[in-house]
Length: 183
Image (cartoon, rainbow, N blue to C red; front, side):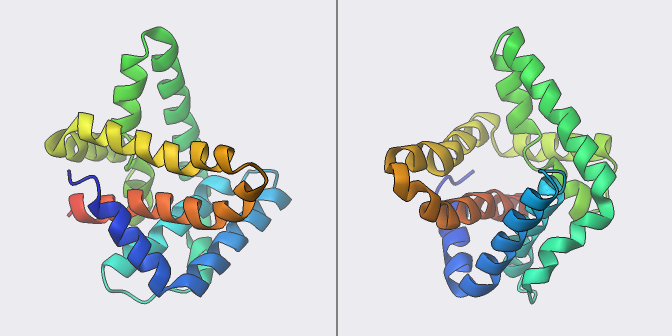
């Protein structure tokens, strides 16, 4: 895995489709707040799919963020289930949680993009991550976490406006890595 390429690709897509992605991100924020976070997972998947589609050369529109809502139950419960497993692995010995988190980083994208069931998506994600280097993917996720969270904590009161750049770009980087690796 080339650690820098997904970030460069995500940044280029973000700049090229700035208005569309920002409107999609605002839709994500508003609907997530209104639904008390219930729609966050499918809307985040929709935001990531904007990057996947743009990377594939397809047209994107801000309302594409809403498309994964039709898979709400599988995306929501699948992601929550994987999250509990990762947390359980972190509480056990830390290493299993880190491994599971990196193995399943593309699972929700597989579930939506390829209409896979959760188990098949987890297996496909794991296979792609292992093929391209589990430890590189773990490092990639740590960089994503650092950029999206730590960077904003350091900025303090300026962190909220920065979120309108860091979150779409970091989530887009994961989506771009998925588009490159899951062919």
